[in-house]
Image 1 (cartoon, rainbow, N blue to C red):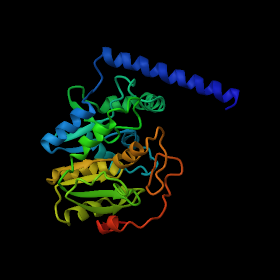
Image 2: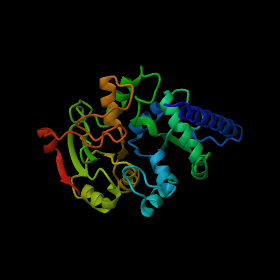
Image 3: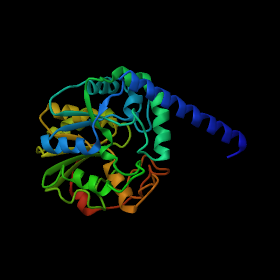
Image 4: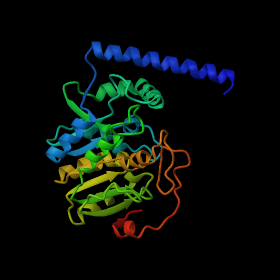
Length: 299
């Protein structure tokens, strides 16, 4: 990095830091911070009540701001559906947000940098849609490892999350080449595993096909969805239809990073790893057990 770029980076770093801290103080004094429960409390509520879960992060907010993201082009219908979900107060349905508004001390340097920039840029839309009288749940239940300074409790968090599908018939809705649980023991406790495979990019373009496919197969105990923002609205629609549906997001990739003791977001060679460099083209493999679990492939 040359001197000019270094100065520019340092200037932007301190500008973002100052803006975030000033807004954090303002939010605290004006009681504008949302109430977001911890990861542990969120998992406990899901386990106790059999709750369904939709998670909102930076990608969902960008789509609601009429932007495209890396694996989903802007779609007005999707944006409106996301708005419906985030305002919902249906019983036993958890709207989950990232716990990044009242401070960032628990996160790594790179994660702090990311969330400062995001909250600063999108603070108007966040605080337009958030209800300070409502209790939200923690969207980072599916990211209990890589972004935290203190990783000592990661194993316990993963073990608690695994209880969601322990001894249950599960249906996994995932993108092509996500291969959730392939090559690790993440879902070993499940009674049975079935899968519906969907497009990795722009999954919402075939949303009706995905929804119809789910309701056309035997009803599982729980539906686990890893499909970006499409998962956020799909979990909501399935909950309305009487399913327990959990937007499970990056749990498998986080678990892979945990198993290898990674400290940065590295690609998993055999799996679609959208947040890692060169992670969009995983190695082709044939896993007989995994293939036997697939009920439907949607293209």
